[in-house]
Structure formats: C-alpha cells, structure tokens
Length: 234
Image (tube, rainbow, N blue to C red):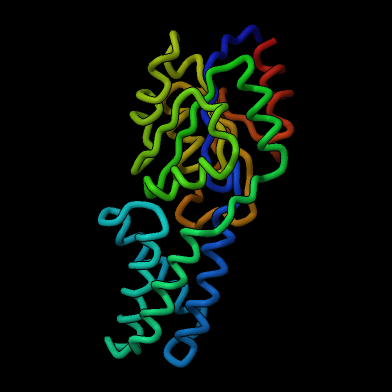
C-alpha cells in the first residue's frame, strides 16, 4: 500500500488501561445505597440520562459522574435522600480518584515498540488532574511526544493534535475503544481510525461501525497493532 505514517494517537481510558470497570463497581454501590427508593435498572436509566444531560456542564470524568449520581439520588427520592447516602457517594468518587492503574494487555510493549519509529500522542478526554495522575502512574509517559487532554473529541480535535505531522491527519492514525470519540471523528479528519473493542465501553460512546470507510481498521487487542501498521505501510 506504501502508506506514509508518522504519527500514532492513542486514547487512554479502556484503550491503554482499565477505567469503565471502576464506574461499573461504583454504579453497583450506588444501586445498593438507593435500593429502598428505586429498582436498579430504572435507577441506571435515570443515571445515564443525568450523565448525558450534564455532559455540557461537567464534561467527562469522575467528578461529573459523582454529581450526576447525587442529582439522580435527589430525583428518585423526591429530595429526601439521607445525608449519609450523599456522603457515601462522595466517598465513592474519592475512591475512584485514587484507584490504581491496571494496564490492558500488550499496552506497555506496543506503545514502547511503536515509539521507536513513530511520533506518539496521547489524546484523551476527562478531568485534567485525574488523567495526569493516571498517565504518571501508568509508566507510559516517557513514550509520548505529546499529551492532549480535551473536553470532547471532534474532527477539529484531531486536526489540531496531528497538525505537527508534515501530512497532518493524512499521515496519522488514531487508536481507541470508542467508535464515537476515537475512530469516527479521526476518520472524518482524514486520519486512520483503529478500533480496539473493550467489553465495558460506556453506553454514550457507542456508535455504528464505519464499515465502508477506507481507513477504518479493527484489532482485537493492542498486540495486533504493530502487525496492522506494518501491513498498511508496506
């Protein structure tokens, strides 16, 4: 194919390290705390509605998630939720902000290998301090030539992140577990988009696969990424 590729962007949460599993554990704790007020399935639907509604106010990340839980607790209890429950929700959020980093399979060796030949960029959403903490604890920081922590991922995000590449997005690839945020807008910007499925991808990050897109690819784990890159650049 003789494709020139000089920059590779990676998503962070649930692409390089586990993230959504901690949200799921906290949601289970939330359901248990509110078990006397709402059915768990109904409660999760209400929470998801609150999260979607609040994205424009709080953005992505743990702090917005905790505020959405508190808002949902107030709604389903008609503002009668005990103060002790609010305190436990705040504690749950603090626990999430301190959880250790668990790298996903092949993340360490793949990023290290590719960083020897390509410009490597981390492009992630979420709370600035929390994302910086996770990156520092991951042990991957030295492999990245640039780090972009953004509020949303749009085609403009990728145009900006890949601007230092001589060919712009045309010489770049974005790798991530979210079709909605990592793959589709990167493709729209003109980059390659590589989907790495994760079992627990957040519902609000779901989107149909762009099967007809010429630069769309899918790998089952990061261990397959170097081989894919070798194939498309040969």
